[in-house]
Image (cartoon, rainbow over all chains, first blue to last red; front, side):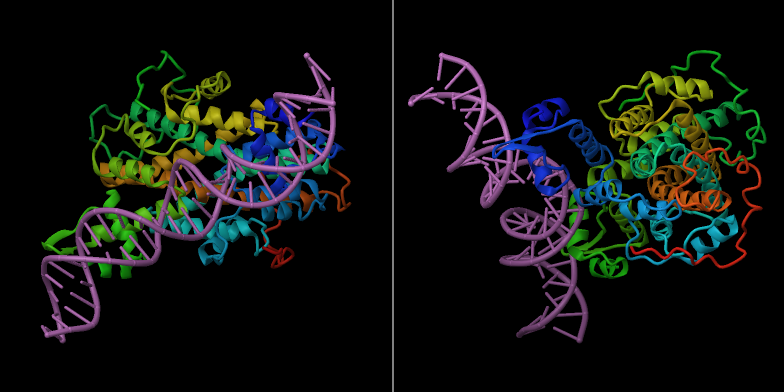
Length: 240
Length: 240
DNA sequence: TCAGTTGGACAGCAACACTATCCAAAGGAA
DNA sequence: TTCCTTTGGATAGTGTTGCTGTCCAACTGA
C-alpha cells in the first residue's frame, strides 16, 4: 500500500499523512526505493487512531505522541499499569497541588490511590475551577459523583482485565479512557433529560410551582418500572 | 469599581477585560462620564464565570456567549428546562444522526428523552469515534456506563431541583454541566486506580500471570470493607 | 498643570493543526 | 526514450482562536 492508497483508505489527505510522518505519529513505511515505501494494515490502524484522538478526543499532537509511546513501548507490570497509562494521558491539573478536600474524599471512600497520582491533582484543579465559576459543589454532592464514577471505573477495569494481552489492556485503558470520556459526558446529558422528565411527570403540573419539590420519594427503586413508553414521546423537538 | 480594580480583583488583564466587553461577554459598566464607568460585584462574578468557562471548561468564546444568553435571558418552564440548557451548551455531534444502537439503548433503559435531543446525537458521534479509534465497546458495556451516568444525572437533577429559583437552577444545570465534566473525568481516573489496586491486591502476586483473572467474585458487595488503609499507601510516587 | 487612567479602535501575536509549494528522484505508459 | 505522475523531503504559508500591544484623545486627581 502506497501513501496515496493509505490516504484514500483513511480519507486523510496525503499532506497530512506526511505531516504525521514528520511528527513521528506515523511510523515510516517499509522503504522499497529512495522514493517509494510500502504501508501495511498497522499504518491504517495507526492513522485511524491518531485521527480519532485528534479530531474527536480533542487531544493535541504532543499528547498523541505520549499516548502512542505508552501503547507501543512497554508491557508494564499489572501494578503500575494505570500509573503508566494515566501519565501518558493529557492531564489538566499540572501545577496544582492535591487539595485537602480531595484527599479526605478519597480517604472517606476508602479508595486506594497513590498520593502523587496525576488524577488527584486534576481533580483538585477541576473542583476549584468549578467553584470559581460559581458552582455550589458540596462535599456530599462530590461524594455521590465519586460513587457513581466508581461504577464507571469498575467497568473500565473489567474491560482491561478481560483483554487478551497486556498490550490490549494498555490499549483498552489508554484509548478507552480518552475516547470514552465524551461518551460518558453525552450519557450524562441524556440521563439528565430522562431524569428531569421523570421528576416533572410525577410532580404537580403547575408551571413553576414546586421548585422545592426535591422530596419525591419515588425514585431510587422502581426507576425502570415507571413510564416505560406508553406512547412514543415526540414532545420535544427543539431547534439545534 | 473601575476597570483597573476589576482587573486587579480578578487577575485578568485590563486588555482582556476590554476584549470581553468588545465581544459582549461582559456587560458594560455604568457610565459615569465619557471615559469612566463603574463596575459592580455582578461584573466580578461574570468575569470569574467567563474565565472559568474559557480556561478550565475549554469552552470557546462563541459557546460562552450562548451559555451566558441562556443564563441571563429566560426563566423557561420546568419541562424544557434541560432542553434550553443543553441547546446552549457546546455539543459535539452537530451533523451526526442518532444511531440505532443509541436509540435502542435509551429505549432498553426506559429513559424518556426527546428524539431530537442534542445529547443523543453527541452520544452517537462519540460512540462511533471511540470505535473508530479501536475501542471495543460492547452494548452491555455501554449499558453499564449508562447506568452509572444515570446516578450522576440524578445528583445533577437533585442539585437543580434544590435551587432556590429558576435562575439559580439554570445556573446550576448549565454551569454545573460544563464545569463538572472535568471533575467527573478526573474522578473516573482516580477511581480506576483504586479499583485496579484492589483487584491486583486480591489477585495472585505473580507478575503478569493472570491476565484472564476477570473472575474475582469478591467485588460487588464489600468494596468499602476491604483494605481500609491499614498503612499509609505511599507505594506509588510516579514521575509527572 | 500634568502624569496617569480610561474607553475605543485596530493591528499584531503565539499556538496549533494542518496545507501548499517546490524540488529532485523514481516509476510507469506511449 | 520521452513525458507525465507519484513519492519523499524540505520549507513556508494558512486559518482559527484567544488574547495582547499600540496609539489616541478625553478625562481625572494631585
